[in-house]
Length: 134
Image (cartoon, rainbow, N blue to C red):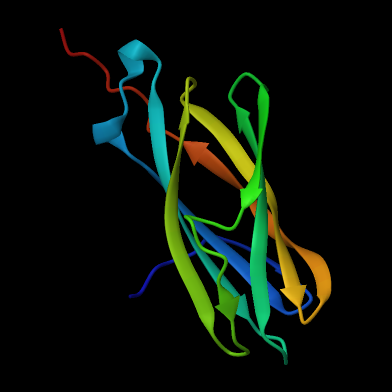
């Protein structure tokens, strides 16, 4: 699957790429509900397998309100990524504002050595409202 990932960060040979997408069919501006999906690809460019054990997201809405989300794995998985391999998943986020941003880190294990792989900051942007013709 060819996916363009406009946001990327590398930490100790682990590259995290993200492609966010606004979901108009799951959003309702009149109800202050805006939804996005985000496709994440984690690439292991290092020499040893790594395992993703935990996630930490920092979600900021258009008003500057910050919510932090921490938990085990991603989408119910704690994948082991072999050297030269990648792991993809898609998840989602909802806000009450038409824009915001996300960033964070994945806790990884390289053998028994833990480290935090950076998740690049990316924007959550909805298209501008359509002008009403009179």
